[in-house]
Length: 576
Figure 1 (cartoon, helix red, strand yellow):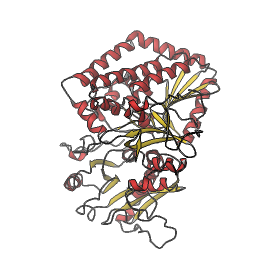
Figure 2 (figure 1 turned 90 degrees about the vertical axis):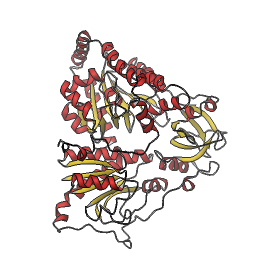
Figure 3 (figure 1 turned 135 degrees about the vertical axis):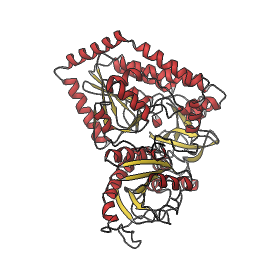
Figure 4 (figure 1 turned 45 degrees about the vertical axis):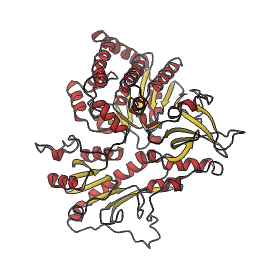
């Protein structure tokens, strides 16, 4: 089928659907929802069989939906309507939620239902539920809807409009959730209530509140133990960019905030002077999982497991330095295999663009901070490449992008959960050249020609297809628990293999042979010479792209690698 994807942005859900549906054999092109006239033109150019809208913030124009079947992906159960579906579900503590694929009509979210899926609601931030449960349910529901298309077109099947008087239909029209609905009373609300409110607003828009007597929006909360003697609302300590705040029956780490007119930053960065007066409470690497911190190390027999759960996968200069120290700690442990788990939702997305932009807004140099950050993440990559006294595994529980993809390739084995999306390219960020030793690592896995194609294509790559191309070694695990269990089993099998000494010796020999042909320092110097021009040269593309990315500027056009219907040659995307 020819499917036009109309979306507000090319977000994680849209990327997952795009990769999977193209792999299914469909012919897809993407248009950002910029204006009614742009949508009308895209339909005229592409002549699709149907329009699929996985992520919209406004209605499809009436000039389109009566003439073309338009399927909307709504992150709510059947009958649910309104723009805050997931927010209400999380804040109210729904035990089960779902996704509905419905046909566009004049009334938003009220058209006939083509398919739906439900899932158990996990206690997690909205953005995490969206990237995982919602995304997988949406893919299953969209595939079911597409399978019904021929019958619908032939008149042999009709979607049904949910009956409002049917007791089985729990969904209802829900209003836009406003800050008054999210408000926190630190003296009266318990930890569970406050945590649910911040989680329901995570990603966007955050909860309007205050820290240090200054207004801000709160994001990224994690429960902590009860603090005897603390007054509810009191700020107690700092750790890994977060500040600890007491509740009436416990405490919460507040990881990120957004000050008025500012950008989302770690709380102790946004309030640097104030947070510096709080006592630092560092988290030991080896500790109980319930004690929050960005870095954690544990062991299962001869297998070490190092997680680095950085918010949204962004790795700032100081975070990279702490990760290098954690790798050194792991190296001193008596293990045979080190599993690098990254974060639960993102393995890594490379350098921290928000922290870089913050330097610029504070009157500093974005170029200098970019340079420090890329060198720091290169040092992380080098630490992994030089970890030759044991086997290493990159276990991608969540998505990876840009430098984060190539950081993963530094490991001996790269395994990813089946639903993970990779974006192994840099050019979308102002034509960045990239570093993280990608010119060594990528061709070494897929060859020179395929490496050039991957970097030029700039499209998302699903884990299953990435494994077929050789970019990664394996894709498995339908969900995160299944993936984590299989990772541990495979890592333990590596550690206990009779030929482990031979595998390790072969790995050391390959690294030595590669170093003799061309040292890692030469790859790094060449990459950084290009990056220096990106950061300090006459072309401001990177700085402009970074600013618009961080500030969430509205899209003004759809990139041509996505809007294939606007290709002058009329080429459509290759079926993969």
